[in-house]
Image 1 (cartoon, helix red, strand yellow):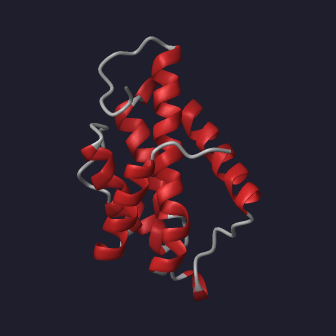
Image 2 (spheres, rainbow, N blue to C red):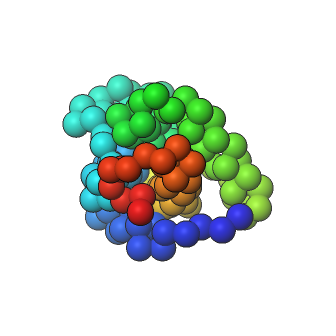
Length: 137
């Protein structure tokens, strides 16, 4: 499995290190790429505090805003690609002690989640002749 967006991965990592939040990092880089993301991510933050992966749940919100008619289809593909990535790279998608995330945990997956999200949106927009999705050309 190949990652294709090194600049975006680095930008996510940079945001993650400076802010410590994978949710904010993914959202900010998505906006920078021209993807849509809701301003209010309180639901994602709540899920994150309950043990869910902030990167993946933020990616889902981005899909719902950017390609609502295909969000579920791409979401399922993203989950499968993340699992593939973890197996290929022998990475645990851990949440730290007592499900508390750390910057180290998030830095392992957030950049890859962003890369895989961009790949899937790009592929999907090409396959469905969708113009106007910024960041996917």
